[in-house]
Image 1 (cartoon, rainbow, N blue to C red):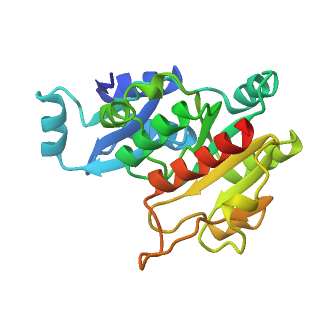
Image 2: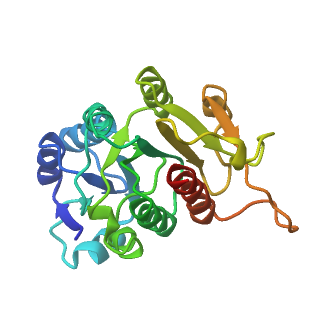
Length: 244
């Protein structure tokens, strides 16, 4: 499961070695060349930084040898995006990918991964920044599915969309702003489905470049579903169509 690395130099070495780091906690007020190197390396690698009081670091490590920096390591190894797409395209099955635009709750992420695994999703694509990390809670909520579904992080979701489209994969966004309902979309073709964040949904700039927008019919007074529930409905519509 997830673990920690502490000490500024140790964290820098972990970044340089390509360790799957979820987040780095840095003590507020730190100064010096080594601290600047850590900050620069983290930002270049797209790793989130959180500036916290020393008491927070002491609680995380249960000792005072952290030197002002603690990194949380993901329990899951991430895949290279382009390699993942190539592997999916080489399968005999019709590709099915899932993209998450800003889903930030680790339990929602875990529930989505669990459903994705049950529906035969070939891979999940998330942005390096602004996405929920994979933590012990994520793995637990996914019922272990996080170890079975390949997950790739990308610098920019829009670039990933363009790459998928150029590879013959049709990109459909789940949004209540759509005119068409999900049941009119043909999911028998190579497909990537995008789910938006819990608060804002899919960003307008992303909606502007995808192939289709689709919504779920809502008969109650509530205007939207939880993202993990909506994701399940979308994925099982894909399953229904492909098994018909």
